[in-house]
Length: 158
Image (cartoon, rainbow, N blue to C red; front, side, top):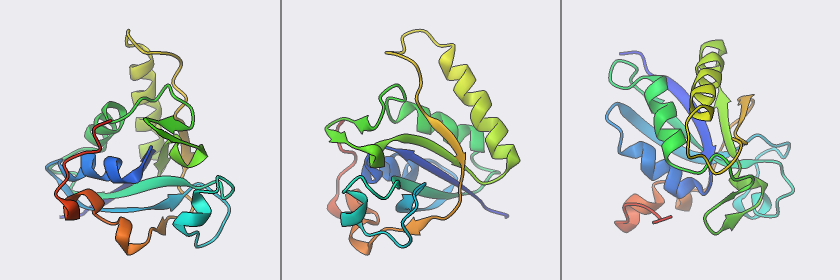
């Protein structure tokens, strides 16, 4: 089996991670920070809204059990992609909606999926999700990893 990696930001990384952990074919998840300019940021720094990083989830998956397109479906359904820099009660650029692609194939799939979502009726507004190359992913502090799972929580309820 050859695993692949995908990285998404869609609000608070605890809830995003919980959404992906439920998917058959997801091997592991890691929450962290990416998309900014500060090296080795801490949670406290990211929360200042000055690092440029988004709370993100890196997903290692088995493409024979779940496709990247399947992960994109989970991404789109797990948050409101029409809300800029906010999901539920969380507000700031660290909560923005982003697909961080790892290669050209992922970039094309992300664009296709965004175009398909944009054609659906019932959206609250224009999709603001960014599609950008992953540059560097910084693993978040241990106390953030598998946060809901360790507390016996299924989701954040947003």
